[in-house]
Image (cartoon, rainbow over all chains, first blue to last red; front, side):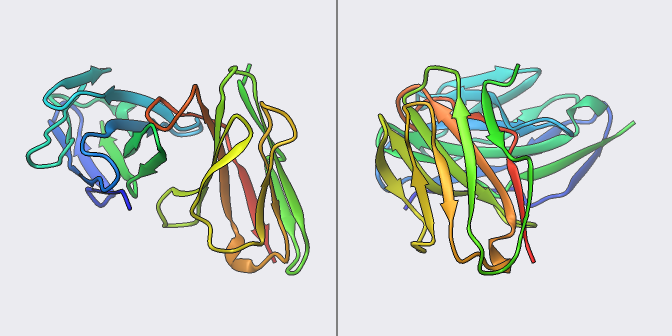
Length: 113
Length: 113
């Protein structure tokens, strides 16, 4: 079945440093699934951060970016300069019309002021 | 106002008992899902429904039974509870399929003693 592997947390970075959270996927039911990053901020529910449905395209939101790379089957999440408010748990996921989304294990990010 | 309501927020049960977790969504969505997250474990897909029909089932145990009495309801009945069932259970919905963004409820935290 479909699966997602992402950077094992926790990850701690200092404010204004750059960040990359790796995500690779394995899609067995469809060649090009839709790819997602979800985020859970402290005390809040899981919500969409960004989504890309076309291979080769980049999605961005709140200063985060992720590019859908079908060659390496990756969808890494990057931010050039993190803020303390970015502290959260980040989940990479893939989904398609025929299957419910599958999620990675989640990466807990702590940003030190 | 929350668009996906899960009840109760916390639930304590004894081994061998039966509980029902409630989920209602007011987003007008046609697809609904159940996920489970145990301590230090990934967000695990359990069931998906579309137009009140079971689409996908990744839960091996028949002790877990989803129930859809209305289009915007997807409850989860768990029988013969075990301590290993202790987890936070999340309900989610999307417009039509797993290719779309999922919207999550805040979860029901179940503890089985």
